Length: 66
Image 1: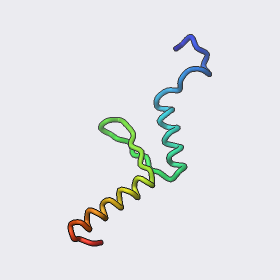
Image 2: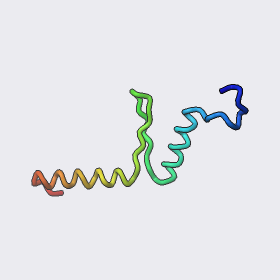
Image 3: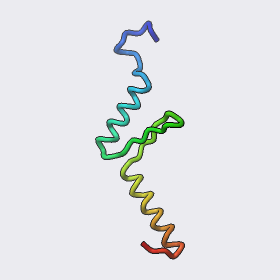
Image 4: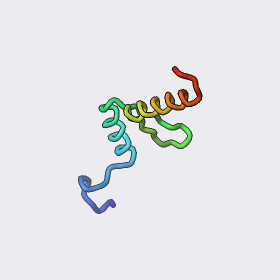
């Protein structure tokens, strides 16, 4: 790894994560840092929307309409 010039080295993991987080924030997503695992959880707005729809369906199934 060290024998390659700096430009060709792969960026460090945290930098990649940060870049991913930045790109996601730009699209209006949310980035949650997981304390326990030390990982990242990325929530897309679309995902959130789908999740909300699913929960609404579940409530309807039970007979509890919003």
